[in-house]
Image (cartoon, helix red, strand yellow):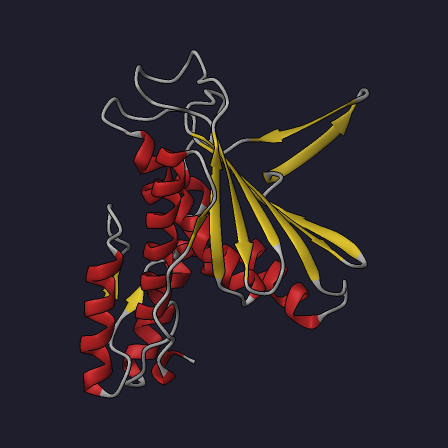
Length: 244
């Protein structure tokens, strides 16, 4: 079963699904975190895993949408948007997130009434790395998802442009995707094809129930940090052998 992430992550529910899957003795669920199938993120993952730049020390994420629907809430900034940075941080670093801090500047005049947008989220990991996320869902100019890894011996960045970039007459420029479908179209296709290929082999690959549970737990800590205005530690159950 290919399962997209829940709109409102619930760590307790995710834990129950994971426990039920363990009772079968094999993996049955692939969670739909599509950034793991994006060509640029795959290239960054391979670079970090190869160790050419040394150990990753920090990740900088930028997640911007042109606009948000009127019913979008401040909590949904974490549960429906930053959840992707939660997963991709864990995946890129191979580390668990142990604490979350959410900082809020004054809201943009473009944000609907009652929505604290933008926000700045900081993750701490069990490997000693830090990751920050700028989430801004009413930037007005388009859709951007960027990530930069700062390592011991260099940096690597993805998501700067989609399509052709032009340098001319002392200026540079390129296209900005209007939305997430255009930006991650190929990643969605690659994700589904990978699931189909694995299913034909009688296997399940890709993000697991553990990944869904861990992301949900981080998001719950993020919402608590958002409300309390302080650092909140992430509470994770022990990782079962099935997901190691």
